Length: 226
Image (cartoon, rainbow, N blue to C red; front, side, top):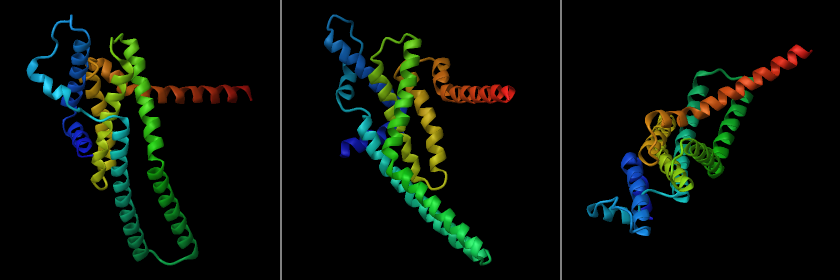
């Protein structure tokens, strides 16, 4: 367990170095399997390549879940502090009390769902990015083990869940850093240039805008037919 935690935090603190080591380890493994190739990795670099580097999908999911639970406690504490402050400054009323209770139950219910079903959200979000990276890898004709590389980039980029230990701003920092780590992984691990990596990162936004355009077009066609 200590090794897993060390790899997780090492990937979080040194994302570019970790992604570079993952790429060099693949080259090293290829060299070992095919001795006829030229030496790709110097002998002084063999030791770190033979050790465990980064985290796999299950390890990233498990440790990230711990940070999500921790963040949930922060949110609950902030929620109850807000309720106490609200009660202190608001006047009593049946409607206001009912609205406050409904809002409180909804917020807590959403938080519990987000925490309990985090593994499902993590799996869906991971597969989304993995498939996008695989598509662009094929498009840019990268001669790599695409399945393996895509999972390495995504799972190690999700170590940014560590930012969730920071109250209030942790979730925002995690989301921004996650995109930065993905960008760095594409550059250091897969060998994309800046433009190629940038296209991958903005792809979800382009898909969202395309979906909005199609919805608007459908609504417009339905309205014109009435």
